[in-house]
Image (cartoon, rainbow, N blue to C red; front, side, top):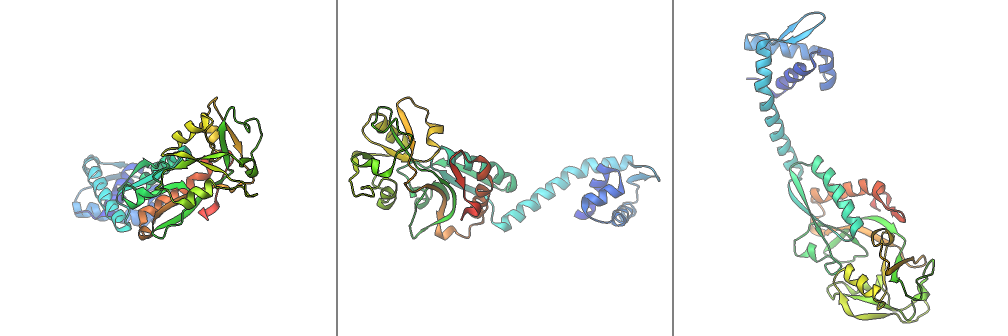
Length: 311
C-alpha cells in the first residue's frame, strides 16, 4: 500500500517527468524523490519509470497506475482538506446581509473569494432594508451585516469600519436647494426629513436625520414612516421630504426628479461590519470580515474612502 507522500511524489513525477522539477515543486530534495520512487518500485516488484541520463518516461505499468491512482489521490486530498477546514471552524453556511447597493457589491465580491478559499463553507447573501437595521442578527436570519453606522448595542459588535463617505442630501428636482452646488447643515432649517420604521433605534435616526440645525432651528419629520430607501426617495421626489445618504447616491440613482448635493459640514457616513457579540470567536465571521476589508479599496466608488485595517 502506498503512503500519501509516495502517491504525491509518484503523481508529480508522472506529470513532470523530471526529478529536479518534481523536487522543486514539492519543496524536497531530488535525492528524496529518487529514493521514494526506487523504494516504491522495489515494493511493487515492477518498474514505474524508464530512466536514462537524458529522459524519464512512464512505463506501461506506470501509466496504468497513474490513471487509477490520480482520482483516488484527489479524493483523499479533498477529504483531508475538508477535515482541516472543519478543524478551523470554517464549514457550513454563513449568511451575510448588506444595506445599500455598494455594500451588496462588496459582499458579493467577498463571497467569491471566501468560497474559493474555504470550499467547505457556503455564503448566502440577503438584503438588509432600512427598517431591518440589525433585526436579522437578532432573529438569526443573518450572521454578519455590512450596514450604515453608527451602532451601539450591547449584544452586537462593530467588527470593522469599512468606509467613510461624504454625506449627501437627496432633494426634489424642484426643491429650493436643488440648484446649489452643496447644502450646508444650517440650510436644512424648516425642512422635513423622512421618518423611519419604529424598530430602528432612535439614536441612529437622530444621528442621520437630526431634529435641529447647529443654530437650533427645527427640522421636522414626515408623518408616514418609510421601510425602504426606495420609499424614502419617492417622498423626496414628490417634494414632501429630504433624505441623507452617501457618495454613491448620484452614481446609483440617476433620476430627473431628484438632485443629490454634498453636505460637507455634516458628519461623514460610515459603513461597517456588525455581528453578534457572542459570535466574536466565529472563524467564519472573522474570515469573511477580513476579505471584505481586503477587497473594499479597489471597489470603492468616488467619494468613498476605505478605512485602512478597518479601524
